[in-house]
Amino acid sequence: MVTALRVHQLGPDGLRLDEVPLVDPGASEVLVRVHRAALNYLDLLVVNGTFNPSLPLPHIPGSDVAGVVERVGREVRDVKEGDAVISTFIRAWLSGPPTVAVLPYALRPGLGMGAPGLFATHVLLPTYGLVPKPPTMSFDLAATLPIAGLTAWNALKYAALEPGQSLLLYGTGGVSLFALVFARMRGLRVVVVGTSTRKLEQAQALGASIAVDRGRSADWKQEVLAATGGEGVDAVFDVVGGETLNDSIALVKPRGRVVFCGLLDGFRVPFDTGGFLFKQAQLIGMEVGSRADFVALLQGLDASGYPEALQRVVDVVVPASDAPQAFKRLAAREHIGKVVLNFEEVGTP
Image (cartoon, rainbow, N blue to C red; front, side):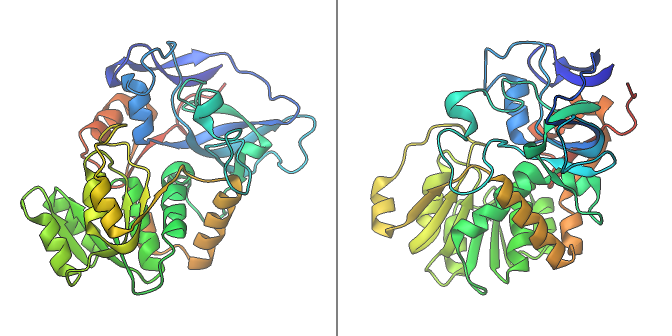
C-alpha cells in the first residue's frame, strides 16, 4: 500500500492521509519513493476547488516532488534503482517552443489539477517526466524547483536583461524569491514591492536593492519611479495579475518587458490598453518550461555553486500529516518562499 494525501472535501480541512493500492511500474515507468513535496499556489487553487469546481473526489493533489527510484519498468535503461530524481511539471513538453499539444490545459487535465497528483509516499513517473537530482542538492530545495524555480529561471530568460539593469518583483512567495536570487546571480538590480515589513526585510537580506511597501503608501508607484530616476524598471516579473498588471505597465520603461504568469488576483483583468500602447511595452506570457529548460536550470545552479541565498528560499518543511496547516499557511500568505511537505517518514508499502 501507498500513503497518499487526498482531498475528501474542498478546502485544506478536507485533506487527509489515506492508504491506497501500490501499482507496479509500467514498461517505461519508475516507482519513486517521495522524500519531499513542495506546495504551489496552484495546489491551493485545486484544493479549494477554485481551479476545478467539479474536481472528482477523493483527489490526490500536487505536482512537485523529489525522491529516490525504488523500482524500474522492464524497458527502462537510463534510470536505475537508487537514483535521486525530481519530477517535471509539463511532462509532454520535452524541449523547444511550446505547442498546444504539449501544454496541460488545452487538451486534458494537468498533473494534480484533474488527473491524480503526486502527493504520496510512492508515485509512478514516466522516464521523460523526471530529471536527475544533482548529488549535492538537498531534497528540500529539489522539490521546490519544478514549478517555482523553473518559472523564475525562464522569466529571467524572457526578460533578457544585462548586468546592471533593473527588475521589479512582487512579494516574497517562492517564485519571486527564486527570481530575486537568480537575478542577483546575474548582476541585476532588483526592486521588490510587497505589503509586509518583515518580508521586505528578508528580500533585502537576499539582495534586493530597493524594497517598497505598497500596503503603507498610497504613492508606492511614485516611490518606485523615484528610485529608478523617474524612468521605471527595465523589466517586471508579474506573478500577481489582476489590476497589478496595469501597475506593471505603468512601472516599466518605454519598450520594457513585462513577463507575466500572474494568477494570485484571479484570471481576468481590466487592461489599460492606453498605458500599454504609450509605453510600447512587451507583454510576455509564460508557463513554467520544458524538460530541457529544467536541465539547463540545474546545470546553471550547479555552475553557480549553490549560493547560500538559494537555501533560504525554503520557508519551512513540515510533516505530510500537517498538510492542512501547511495549506492554510499558504492561503494566509504567512510564508516567505516555499512550503515543503516531508513524506520521508510516512509509512512504506
